[in-house]
Image 1 (cartoon, helix red, strand yellow):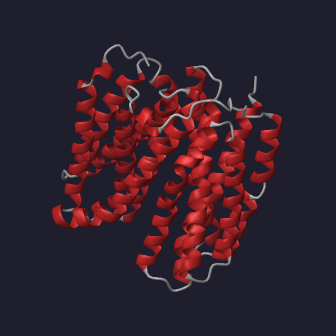
Image 2 (tube, rainbow, N blue to C red; image 1 turned 120 degrees about the vertical axis):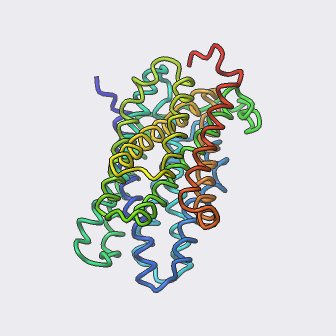
Length: 387
């Protein structure tokens, strides 16, 4: 039997991520069109990733108090406004403003869709629902740039205004869609006297700190690969076509990890997390070795799959370890740390790479993942963990 509520959530989230993906690419091209520096593009990217963190706790609390669809509705409105605003951006302050709004809208959708899709579901059913949601998010994130490439064709600069308006047109139906969804399937009000669970209490839950560590490290490892794989190719004299195929292979491997997630974690999810953290550590560090081309492809495959699996395990456990009334706050906190990890990667990655070399940064990241895996293995949470 088709779960219409889940189908609606997944479809609306897919549309939101397609619009966001198109708009994110357009931020860079709009900056070029209006003559901004590379630094300005970087600052705009930081505003997209970091400013939503300022609203993370309040967004999480709202979701926890039964206002998930209201938060999602506001996110849809913000997405549409930001896409429309980018179409008419002509200076740096406007680029910063609409980049930040885009990040806030996407952030709200990310939290609410994850919490709503596992709401009132048994663990196995919740895993399947989460897997389907993240698969559609991955497709949306891939389809956006593909649309840009198809519309832009051979042009150096694509028609940015037209593409921003296209993103706006994709985002607009989300607003009435979420409104109707909230009317037909109410999220359910929380008890007005329900105790508000502080973040400090959530952090004390068994296994939650290890989930945060793995989630943040895996997001950072993924960001490093995206940023520095082209530099590895340049250092080794690899053609751009090979690097492009490797990036595509990484995406396919991450997609496969999300697809097989429900089956791979049927047993003890925490044990699976430890095993694949070791695999991610080894494959990340392996990029520092002078591997032949075939072995480099294999390393990309293992890295993409293991990191992709760790990301979805982090999402799943951050939604299942806390009680239902704290899931929004826990998810918001996890996403905030992941965003901060991405920011540190952008800001410090270049400095670290220049000090110890591009290859050295992969050794450092692999070592961090390995230490996290060892720490979890030696922790008390491994004993008797049936989840």
